Length: 221
Image (cartoon, rainbow, N blue to C red; front, side, top):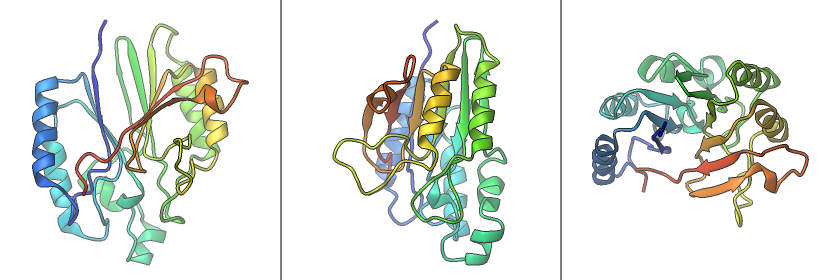
């Protein structure tokens, strides 16, 4: 059965949000009528400001359902160091979704979202060994005929020509686990560069490899 996923990332609600482009994205989404709407992180520009969260919540609610959303590094407070250290995910959970590692399924597809945002780094991301093990175990629960997809904000491969923003910590372990679990596709964002690749490009030890679909910013100037 044919399935349609619409993927956007890096909305950055706040001073750099392009409202005109934002309206075009919503129109396109409702025209496309995807089986699943994926928002791959950075829904606000600065997580310290409540008004940006209110704008982000309103904008996301205008996108089609069902939706799977993961947070990005901009969704963690930067200026409020106490909040960054003690409750880095609180506002995201309050205004967007309480689920940090969401899962969506239908009769022939399983999509696993992973939170790669961390409080100890401004730009970079990480998957813990526990997250990787959980992801692999979750995907393996579904039969081989299922299309298995992973969503995260940060990338696991360096796009050609981009050496400034490195892949997540434990990227190699995540790539190997996805391959063992039969993940066909990873949807990510973060570096505002559109890129299609395959994990086979970085490791000849993989069995089938996983396609990487990295979206550029949807609405940020």
